[in-house]
Image (cartoon, rainbow, N blue to C red; front, side):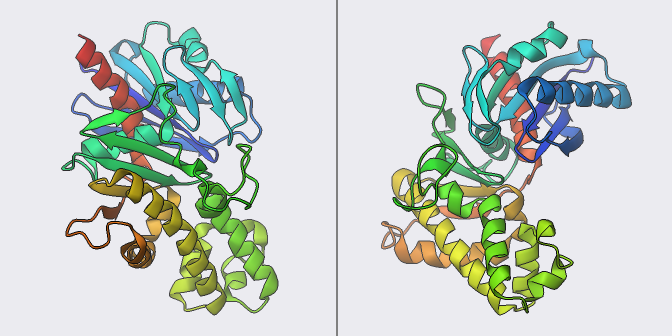
Length: 325
């Protein structure tokens, strides 16, 4: 009988799930919007509904599911299975694994930080499959980070290593919902970029940004800015340059600390591709501490895009189970 793994990626904006075959290939996926202000039980109900729907559509039985892996933003205690803290989902000590086990009590289930899962997915099957060390930076509702050193995922004593979105880049800066001020994610997440774009639009009523969002601020996305930059809009260019500055400060800090083979940028903003990379590289090359060295960390966009978190979540559990056998 064929065996499958299920990967689940719970984000502040969307919940995505995928079915992974026994060759570690993602063969089916689905996504829905995350219930706004939803409780943990409501989100798990959504996940269970999505899993059941996928199994039915793919004609796969529960008996052939060898494991379920879940990636969530925040601090995950892998011993208890609880999410101890997730600022972008307002989770505090939530037993998501326990809730899932109530429905799938015969299937091994484990949870990990979503950026750890994305880092593992890119390391196994994406941009980082040929490197020894990789730092994943996911730019979404917040900023997540995953750290792979000497081909091993580094999680720290509380399984909370890699919260790169909460390194401070401005000590007296914007208040972050983690409780600190000036956090990297408060300036360089997709959420921050959208707010920066809206603020600039309010000052320039003639910007092409307005046309691209149908003159409705609620429709502004990261893509709105990037499309306007390609159309040579001056206001969009100013926002872009400021955003690249914020992004570069965080990336340079990360490179100075870890000196990894690769920094892999994922999340929705990564779809802008070379529009970001070319500008980011220029600033990093000018300011990183090891700028005089012959070797430098490669900065690349994630190859698996949104699939990385789903694939990594499932494979982290599958490969851990294989090592235990």
